[in-house]
Amino acid sequence: MSSANNNTTDTACVQRGMAVDRELEQSFPASDAPSWALGRTSLPVMMSPDPVRYRGVSASILDAVGDTPLLEIDGIFAKLEFMNPSGSIKARIALYMVERAEQRGLLQPGDTIVEATSGNTGNALAMVAAVKGYRMLVVMPEGLSSERVAISRAYGAEVLFCGNFHVNQALQRAHELGAQPGYFCPSQFESEGNIEENRLILGPEILAQLPAGRLPDALVLGVGTGGTLIGVGQAFRAVNPAVRLFAMEPSESQTILCGEIAGHAIEGISDGFVPGIFQRNAGLIDEVTSVSSQQAINEMKRLAREHGLLCGPSSGAHLLAAKQVHLRYPELKTIVTIFCDEGEKYLSEHFGNRSTTADVAFL
Ligand SMILES: Cc1ncc(COP(=O)(O)O)c(C=O)c1O
Image 1 (cartoon, rainbow, N blue to C red):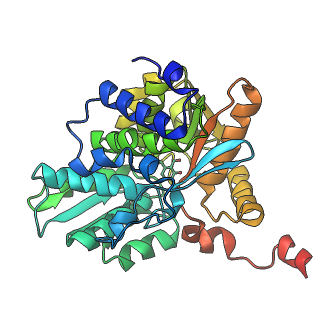
Image 2: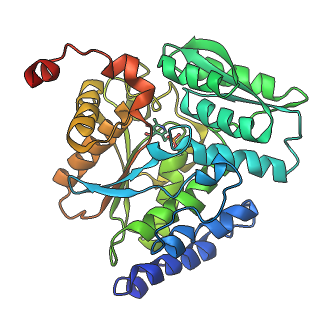
C-alpha cells in the first residue's frame, strides 16, 4: 500500500479526491460492491461546487443517505452522520447490506429482514425495508432509549425484546431467526459489507472534504460493530499509512481493553462483547482510549447549547476523546471523528428536564 502524500499535498481538493479514489480502487478491488456504490465514491468531489445537493427528482428517501457535512469544531474534524435519514450513520450500512444481499439473491420480495441492534441499525433497516417493501423484525435489548423503539415501529417494523441493555442475547436470537426460510439477517457485527461501505463510501467522502493538502493523521471512534473504525481506517491508511487509529469505549465498560462488561450511557457502542469485525482487524488499531458516560453527556449537551448540534452521547464522547488525543499527541494535526446519531433519539433520557440550572439562569 503506497502513500498518496507526494502526489496530492500540493494539488486542489478535486484532484486530491480523485487521486484518493484511484488509490483506493488499487488497494481494495471493489468487485464485491454493489454497482451504485462505486460511482458514489467520487460523488461528493464532483458535486461540491454545485449549489444543489440533489439534482432532479429523487427516487426515494434512500437517495439522501450519505453526503453529510464535515465540520471543524474545537480543532477536530467531525463528520455529521446524525444528519442521515433515520437519524444515524447506520443508514449507510443498512442500505449497503440490503442491496448487497439483493444482488447476491439472499433477499427476495416478501422476505423479512431480521437484525440484532442497540437501536440505530434497527431504525435504519426499518426505513430501508419500508421503502423496498420488506418486513422488518428488530431484535433489541430492553433498557435503551424509548425513542429508538418508537422510530422502528413508526417505519412499520416489529420489535422483539431480548435481554437487557447489552446485545448478546438479541444477537443469538436474530441469527436463529435469520437462518429460517424467508428471513435474512445482515449480521452487522460480522459483515464484510459493513466494513466495505465504510471503506468505499464514507472514508473517501471524508478524504474529499478535508481542506486541500490535508490528510488524516488520526481517526478516533467508538466501537459498536467496529465497521466504521475499521472501514474508514482502511480508507485513511490507503492514503496515509501512518494514520493512527484510536478505538474509544466507555470508561465504565472497557470490554476491549479489560474484558469488562458493565452498564454505561454511551448508547450505540460497547454492546457487551468484542464484535467479530473488531476481532478480525484488531491489528489495525493503535490505541484504545476511554471516556466516562457523564463526561460524554455533558459534552453532548454543550454541543447542542454552544454549537446547535443536537446529537447523542457518543458524539460528545467522540469529541472529548479526539481532543484528548490532540492534547497527548500534538504532532497529530488532522484528527477526524464522527457524530453518529441525533439527539432527538435521547430527548426523554437526557434533554427532557426543564428545571436545569441553565433554564433557571436564563430567566
Ligand atoms: C451511536 C453510534 N452509532 C454507530 C457507531 C459506529 O459504530 P460501529 O462500530 O458499529 O460502526 C457509533 C460509534 O461510536 C455510535 O456511537
